[in-house]
Image 1 (spheres, rainbow, N blue to C red):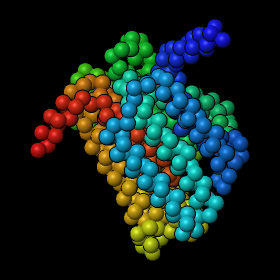
Image 2 (cartoon, rainbow, N blue to C red):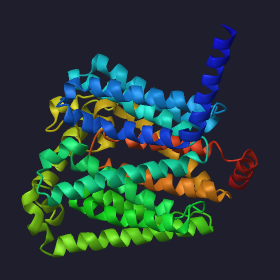
Image 3 (tube, helix red, strand yellow):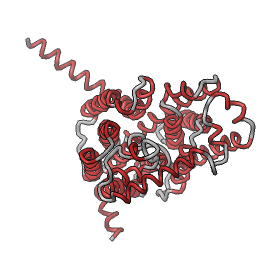
Image 4 (cartoon, one colour):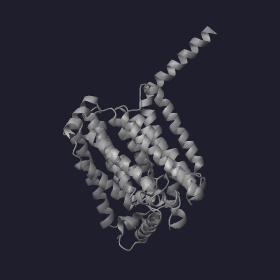
Length: 432
């Protein structure tokens, strides 16, 4: 019995040692895979919106595994004030969404959206906060997004030039909107990975080259909102008033280079015959290269905006219940996250989301103005990533599709909680 006890203890020690060794890479990849895989699971399994609880349960289990591994990798991690404020706001929004089912008309679709929020956005926020609660977690998250974006980007390039139709492409990655988010995340991450001082020069340049390569499938995706969001996020990061340091200047240099490359690829697709030569593949590139005024998708967006605003005016305080727009509107959601919250949860739900954005903005300012280059760099990366999905959420996707935003909100709070206390006191003194 004693020998068995010693053996069991040795096994536990070996397990913890292995997690400490591989955890810095496994946990971020698990978290990114958890965020990404939902759309692929929906499409590949042929599951419609009303029964999307199955992949949600599977992928929520992935997050629980990641949290379990985090317990061993960072056993000293504690929830701090910044993380707590953000996670409380996320929880309150979840409670509002859930309670709106009582009076709402969203039906099964509303239940699905609520379940998806708790299963992806809320759990994603917790994962983001815990991973970023240690400064070394943020660079590894950037690596994870770069690797996943590059993998999907290469799949996109191969399938487009192989003549695979959009519907077949969707089975591999959930469709163009999902592809463009991941490829934009990967491209933005490449610009920041390029500046990591701990990497060898060859690895830095390889990361930058990978980001440049991702600009090709990013444009081929044909997602106008996603491509515009990538451009805006790059510009926001370039103009961010971060404190001067070598790492920040390298990051901005990398992001500026990638923005120029992406604009050049867009110009080639727009003003040459490239779009015509691959239009037979069934991609949406023709949407991106055609004139916007008068297009059916843009007209449909305006119709959805009018419907959502009309719903808000009829019930401005508590809305019509989550999922109600799918019953009253022309689409399942208004393609704008603020109008979705206003029409379905009223000022109450929208106010909680606005508070999250304000808290995230305040914490990002603390990070990019920090005297620690690692915190500055992490803040710049999180600013670019949150800006990208935030802009995309203005014209495409719903709360579920915007789950990345809640993940980054959590990560912002987690990283901000590592700012040394004396520096926070100095910041408060400057504000006074």
